[in-house]
Length: 392
Ligand SMILES: Cc1cc2nc3c(=O)[nH]c(=O)nc-3n(C[C@H](O)[C@H](O)[C@H](O)COP(=O)(O)OP(=O)(O)OC[C@H]3O[C@@H](n4cnc5c(N)ncnc54)[C@H](O)[C@@H]3O)c2cc1C
Image (cartoon, rainbow, N blue to C red; front, top):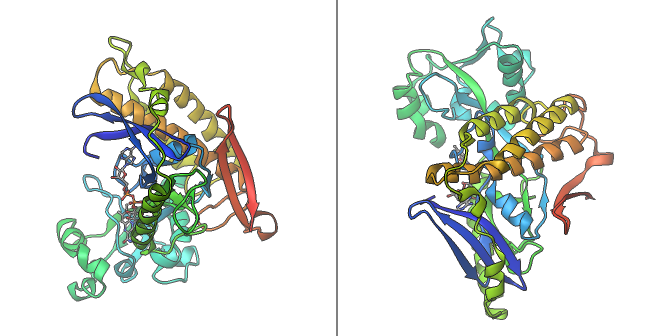
């Protein structure tokens, strides 16, 4: 992130103002613009196991919401089933094509595909959710392990599809997948929900545009592998063009009053105050989301998660950095994380069915009669979340 963190965003009469914290210089900046394109990515790092950069906790969703935009489909979080879960190795993705050439089994030697009746191939591509649920059940519910054995697979096979070929050096050679079975567990991978935009990349707020994983709706309740990068290219260009056109057609004067409106978070920057550990709190948050707000959800678990998160959020907003730059960054990230997590959990609790990546064990069926549509959330004038359902 180059040490720059956008912490606040305000749109007024088609102009934008943002507050940015620069960790490098330990300074707060306020920047004005006549239009703004939000491209802050997703929130996979809210979960205990994930493959996103650590910082991806959904800042953009909260910035957009506070600027007056709406979010949709936030309950739809995609998990990738086959992440390396070996001690001392990063949680690399095992490519779907190569994974199907080997054996996937639990500690009792039971084949996972057969046990959970997963016929689709490649399973990690076409049955991403079913396979993630199966692994979650085996590992986190039953306390077992799941192994992937690719020992018999030839180097030629690794090179057959481009994704596997690109990982041969690291997985096959450095992680030793040619010599031994390895432990596998799912990972949070992608958020399908986000800021509501139209085909031009415009949000409902004049002058505010968005593109990429911070937006919602393009992938429905699930995402086909490979489409996210295409999305960033197509909609990034579209949003950029729209923002440029907006500025040309609306040469609004920069409004100094808008800059003055934004608070530069003085509270978290007071010196010599009691320290609490934001890193400990975010760890706790990730565990809560993983256990109750992720691959297998239920009313009981989601309610428990919302209550537990509430406590963390209260602590997070009471924290002060005591002049420590790193601590200040962590606190700001933690606050974004709490707010995004709360929206995901609330959305998941509201949607009483299973669809795409959202699986409710207490409502395991898809219910098109009641739930074919988008859950949307905005903020009321007093800052409360306002939920609505838009049928399609
Ligand atoms: C391991 C992995 C493999 C993947 N493989 C594929 C694939 O093969 N094909 C495919 O289509 N998709 C794939 N995806 C998904 C795809 O990479 C992402 O959806 C896509 O990169 C999102 O792009 P983006 O531009 O929206 O956001 P990002 O690329 O995530 O960029 C967002 C940027 O905004 C910055 N940012 C966030 N908040 C703030 C803030 N408050 N202030 C300042 N900066 C901020 C972040 O630091 C980051 O630099 C993969 C994802 C992962 C994690």
